[in-house]
Image (cartoon, rainbow over all chains, first blue to last red; front, top):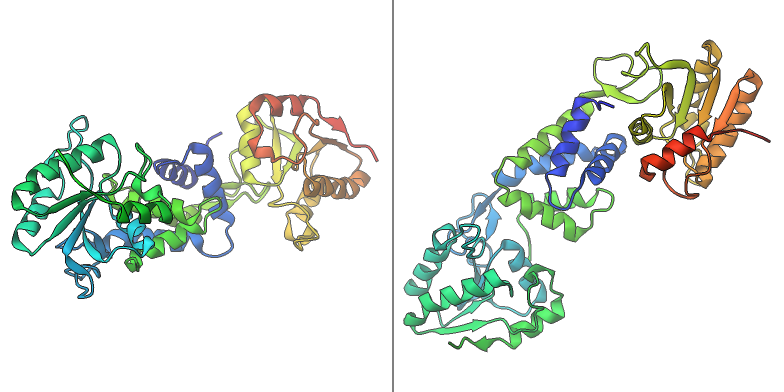
Length: 202
Length: 202
């Protein structure tokens, strides 16, 4: 049966989201059709404002509200500027902030090195990190990329780049499940990983 | 940590969808932030057009394209007008159409009777069904509400209402798993349920 075009369009759009199959997409669509509040409208508005209302922090490249030059963390005087935690994605910052156990600042790479997918240092915010470390009084860089092959490779590459600058380079403790994804870790595991961080050896 | 408002708004809106928790909502939101194509825009547009682009068929109350008075099935001369299949939701029509085994028409109640939730006959398209059966040359009504407590109750109520009109009243065969949801049934089960439909007894 041919569905009315507006319905089919929404099912198709939902199906493009990760983890949403055609069955879930049509359930969401028909739910929205009969939803009592103006949920479809609110969702459309939030989607429209998503990119116009956000920008990247010019220092750490985390996502922040449009109009700001620096994110809340980078512009906070209470956060230790001599400690930088390097992560792959903004969601990783949220996961680490949720632990309440970190008082330094961040640097978001927006991905990890992946020769297979053609992602090299130029595609990530690596030059910006190195420039930041060079210009500032950074004492330690925590390489908190995911404990996966790409994350380990990215950390190793960054260690190579940053080692000549003579600062402390650490990696989150292997309390994290290997091959997993940082943002899924529970707060206790992340706390232990933070406190048990180890010197990076050859 | 306080997220930028546009991001928090979208996470909140996604969380209002059925089956979407806060974790999934934030994953979807951050996925959309870095999605290469203009997915957020397409999704917003599809959501905006959802209600303006659709309307209800004035005969069977299934969803159809805006501007049409009757849906494709009701206006098709090849569909048997003397056979009406009564379902709870538009998704049930899609499930039955997918079987390819039904050539009659439909009537969508938009819910089931539920004294607990305060849903009575007035909240559903029941008067419209009775009027339709009265005015037309309807030979048989298949009461294809869900094989759940509410669905059975709704079917029993409709049988009571329609019996005086002297037509054949049937219920889908109990090949369907009791307590389940019609739209989840596989095509084979639905086909067997259609062909094995039985007279409604006291």
